[in-house]
Image (tube, rainbow, N blue to C red):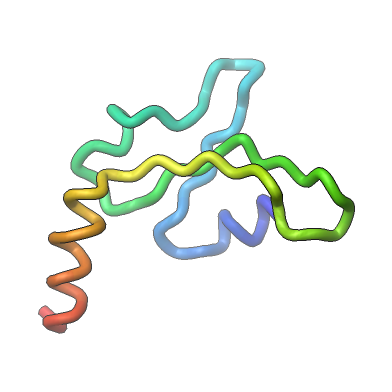
Length: 72
């Protein structure tokens, strides 16, 4: 599961709770990537049932998507 997320363009996995490394909103500010962590797989061989995602919604959700749609 982690390997699939890490191989996906635009997603950066930050999941090292032992060293207190995990996504925080301030870390996503002014970035296009989505930060993810807290990957939980409760049932074996299933889609994760728990996932924490942080992103700059104004930048990625509005500005970047508009540019991508316009093809600039």
